[in-house]
Amino acid sequence: MSEDKDVPYIVIEKRQTSISAFLWGAAAGALTALLFAPKSGEETQQDIRDGVRRLRDEAETRLTTVRGDIERHYESTREEVGERLDSARGELAVRKERAERALRAGRDAARNARVDLEKRVAETKAAYRDEVPAESGVSEEDE
Figure 1 (tube, rainbow, N blue to C red):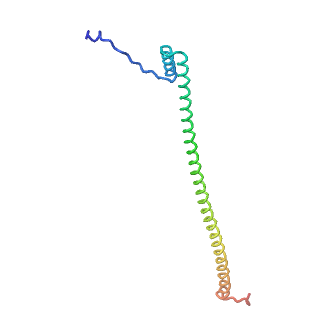
Figure 2 (figure 1 turned 30 degrees about the horizontal axis):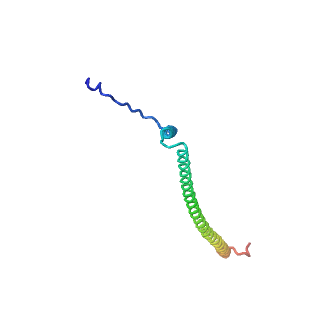
Figure 3 (figure 1 turned 180 degrees about the horizontal axis):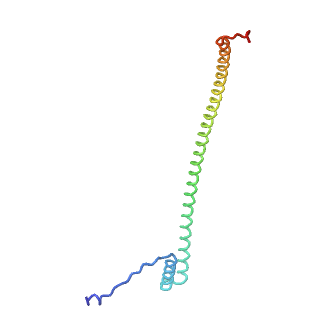
């Protein structure tokens, strides 16, 4: 046990890292590299300009690529939405026509049923009038 006390140990603490810590570390590393670089100030400045130029060109290339991807995706989505709208409009027109035909057929059927019912009622009334005096034994003259 006493041997364990003499052994050095490392304590690792987990902390939430942030982008600012990374950027500070990168800046400190870059500054250290500049201070200990075997190049002259003018050469270092030229290297920095070249690096910034390359970084800018790469960023522009990536931006152009992303912009093109977004435009293509936008256009394809727009076309798809347009096709779906056209399809929905066509389906709506078909359903509207079916509903109008069903409504007209219902009205015609109701009209025909009413005419038929009125005809039957009139026939029943006429038959009833013809049968009532004969069944009662009372003629119209007696009244």
